[in-house]
Amino acid sequence: MVIAVAAGMVTAFIIGVPALRVKGLMLAVTTLAFAIAAMSWIFVQDVFTQGATNTPNVIPPVWGPFDFMASRKSYFFLVLVLLGLAVWMVAHLRKTGIGRMMIAVRDNEDMAAASTVSGSRIKLISFTLAGGLAALGGGLIITSEPTINPQVLFNANESINVIAIAIIGGLGSIAGPLLGVLWVKGIPAIFGASDEVRLLTSGVGLLLLLMYFPGGIMQLLYKLRDFLLGMADERMAARDIPVPVPALDKPVPITSERKVSVEQGHPWLAVQDVHVHFGGKVAVDEVSIEVYEGELVGLIGSNGAGKSTLMNAISGFVPFDGQVEVLGRDISRLPSYRRHRGGLGRGFQHAKIYPDLTVREALMVAMEARDRSLLVPSLLGVPPSPGQERRKRADVDSLMDFVGLGRYADHFISNLSTGTRRIVELASLLAVDAKVLLLDEPTGGVAQRESEAFGPLIRRIQAELGAAVVVIEHDMPLVMSISDRVYCLEAGSVISEGSPEEVRNDPLVIASYLGTDVRAIERSGERSS
Image (cartoon, rainbow, N blue to C red; front, side, top):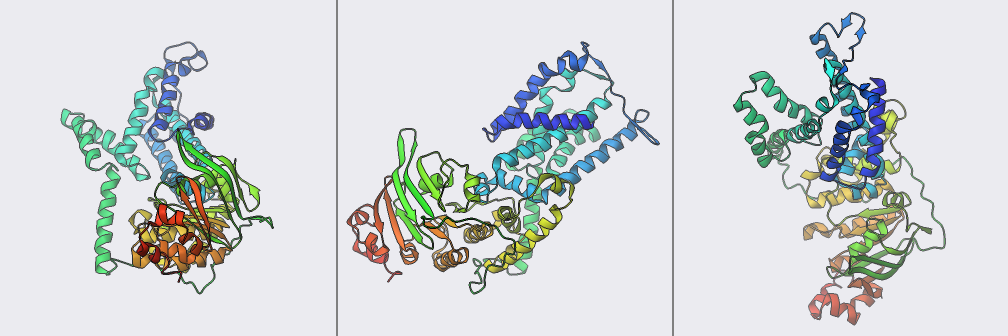
């Protein structure tokens, strides 16, 4: 059994390496393709079957007083104990840095990369552990069979059934697959395989379930939980809680350190002749910008001007031609997570972050930049994993108090308002200790009265990190009031650069972005004056 688990992990790792290039449903198709190849060719080789169609059964072990060969009941309890151990292991892993990173990569791989997490590494870890669990299940199956016919026992349809069971129960949870197998396999076992039962568990019943509850059975339980929590919130008058207000008069209380070296005499961000195209459409056309230590640079332009695409190129999320230097080092050919390990920080236009993580967990993902979790210690709960978890939790609790997120610590990101999610995103930049911040519309989706607080907050975070900042913002009074310099893009090219006053009065900027309406131009200068 130990050899089987090890072989399953190695096999899953080998399959996972090329599968990293695909996502979503096609990833499941990749594994199903291997299942078909295994059933139809690999497992019928003589090395597995000795040339026979049906091979003799594998004799279950005798452990002390437990003879698993003599009693099906004792074998059932063996399988049940191993299931309990597997569930415990996965539940324990879920509470560690490795488990949080798995969910972060699944929910938002770009945001995870901005928190210095390697998506490829986490996917391979997930593949490998899943392969080990699958091999454990396979070993238990063949031990319970009188004879083994690989083409019957390991039919690819069973793999499809496993996927269906997980979806029915609810992906992304530990209890979901258990509920799914109780529904699909348990109901027929208890009530008999009548036509009505088959219709409920494999026909119209499943169709109706997934039509109205695409999150599976767990979605029902989540709705019940949210209903009960909503009632509690109403009783506590906790509705319409305003966006958190950071304690701007206190230093950031983080004890663990992350060292990012800075070469002197260079711009902290230097973008030279960056060109991005999608097919025949040019999104960014030979753009060059520079940002120096302590500067806050605004990036303005109409929708479709190429601002977000330029940030994506700098962050490594889209392919580009040209050169990008951060803190004096060329990062043009580095993957996105390595760019962010080198001092880059990124805020996104849509602050979705990680819907299935709590605020505390999301910030602990960002803490991986300071104290990286290791797989084996996390899996077994041995040092240094417990100490790392305590330090990260203490640092995150202090950070949440600093940015006013303490009351939201155990709230899921998906349940937060847009403004609060923006605060979580900015707090992640503090946790990562970034030196060059790229903020894409930090006030997007935030009410006007709340967005006014973001200007001082961005400046405060910049001062705490000692960072250079680039901000994309359509709120002209805000961007003009906080920026030291401003670049204006139009059709993927820089059409103006200079102080806020110079850019605001540039005829090209007025014609292409601010418009010819004098009132709009005057409004853009209200806060800066």
